[in-house]
Image: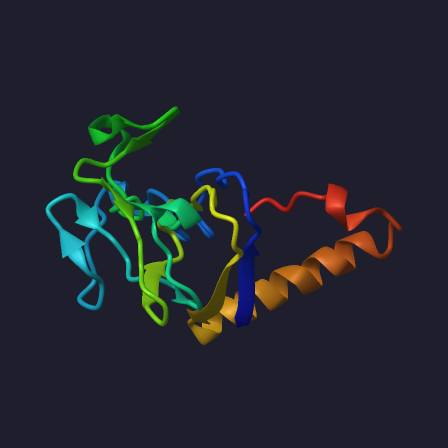
Length: 173
């Protein structure tokens, strides 16, 4: 998917977020779970490879004053809740597995930054007087796109007969 995001001059920072969550929440810590040979493993268990990667291309220099994207590196990894620690970045706190780090992606014009869709991140505050345009390209596995289309079709089928607003419907996954 191709898109663009432009932070206008004097734009406040975004809230911390991940573009998607893990598709396999805590299944790896069930009784008798074993890593499969095609899955990345570490000492804590299984951390599946990403189902999607986002890249953004800077169209101007992005120094700190223009609000570069900030990341919680390692936030996409999963571990048992008992091992998670409360981490603070500025006025924001969340529980993460050990080893996360705050990274600020200042970048020159033409740079490409790529990240796992599950990583927690935010756009920084643009205190400059110029726009901060960036080109985004999202790469996903074909099965992930098909899953989203299937969920959209299911949503439409559930909403249409009842003539309800689909924006008010939450699907259990």
